[in-house]
Image: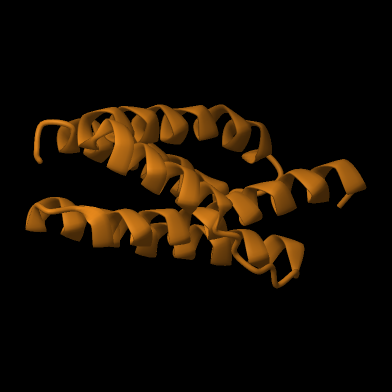
Length: 129
């Protein structure tokens, strides 16, 4: 694998690891038990995505909590609906990056499918408080 492809995989792997922390933090903040459960499930999916990417990179990365802190601040300051809107957009924005990887890394299809599902869950969560 060339350096550019590995760099893209590592960036995606880091993003997935960071998303685990982010969704776990949101699950703790959510007041609605259904939303808590959905955020917890997405966090688990993001961990699975990081493991898929690790199978390609061979690198063990550490999650960073920067995005979790920012999104938690947004959640506390601007509310549930805006946060879920941003989450949905972020999940959708990840898909084109994974599409570029698909030819070389077929397991990425599973991640893409989950990202779309996560975007839909975040959109639905906007209505649940």
